[in-house]
Length: 577
Image 1 (cartoon, rainbow, N blue to C red):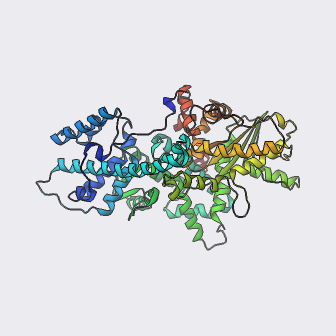
Image 2: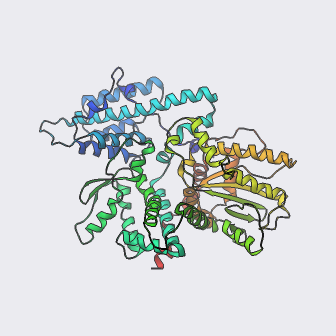
Image 3: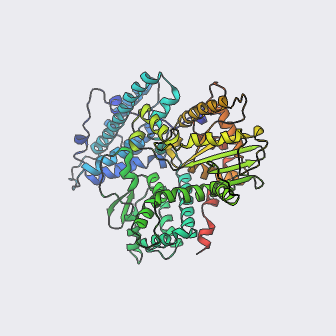
């Protein structure tokens, strides 16, 4: 695995002061003479940049396109300043950064006004001022990051993994993705959700109410509406609804995603919830494509919760959030993704399967894994958590804040004494080590290679250095357990964090036996995590399992063995109509 292929996408951002030394930018003054429509159009071009162009393209190419080939003296002055900076400091710079693009859109939506441009309107000056304002946003973002990094250096003495985590957790889900992959992940999960709603006895009423909400007679009709978003998501083009018999229905569907008002909010929650800008009746623009794709899956929970809360009939589901996380995410979605990832001869049990075995055998035992696999002497223990990080922690750039949040969500026991994910895995491993497993024949458990795996729902958990940190906590607890049991040698593997989207990505490769999960886990541990007992530094300690696995498939020439197009549709959902 080459080091270049393992680098998380990062950029040296071009800031205002780098090319305009001595000037102090005032964003309001720079943009005050530009009509709102032009500013929003510019903001949307910035936001869609990473989906259309090479993220490492030269600033020269970017600027030529930005100025649409009209190369004025101001352009050449800007280019000279950029080249001078790059030559003087010996580094390349790049201009576009998703967080700056979203800040720019926020500003334009809140502050700009529409007006008719005079005949003498200076378009070159407009472009220059838009670019200057964008560079000012870059500078504001990086200034905040530098202040946090200085504090971090003092606190943790240049710990590379912790610095990487504090710096990447705020933008990991905005930077490290491929649009085509995201389309597959979100549509696949949304279809599985509707298959669950249709098949589960408790959600039949909710399934019908959801179709009625969108004026759809069946699920195929609903997904045709959803699939119609793919083309504008990819192209970045305006969504124009044709004036026909379906005009009102399609507009009503799109209006569910429309941004009505905005305010400066951490992690752009308002834009994530409302990722479409409505220009006029029947005319829409996508603010940030990845937000809309995420909404296609995540947005259903909020609508379902609302419809369930409004349900006055006996069919309403109590504690819907717990029901959704347990019945759908854990016992349906993850189970479905994992079931065909292992050899059919392997023992595969969901948490519910284990509980049913205990009920049949009248066994009152302790906690069970959320999913369990034994393939000969290989044991895989899965804990599944729908854990969210607060927007304040995610955007803090403060390692101590982020660490506390992660400890509270994944490690520490809560106020009622219930262990969190890492401790739960430790407790299950304890039962293996003392031969106290009631749901499988584990007489040879001392020979088992145990792979502890934490499945998490949010892509933020792929941030650089996060797996390393959680594995450190896991190893500390495991060492205490081994000392307690006087066990000197162990075949227990490091803790691996896998997000549901990563599992969705790997599912076709694993089910078609293009690669084994064991192969990926072993290689990841060797290159990124190390072993339980060794303090030896690894090559890529900040790399997430997601980034590693995708690069592994690429470097081994396996990535093209699978086409996600062949796995996009959930046939049972459509055929059942």
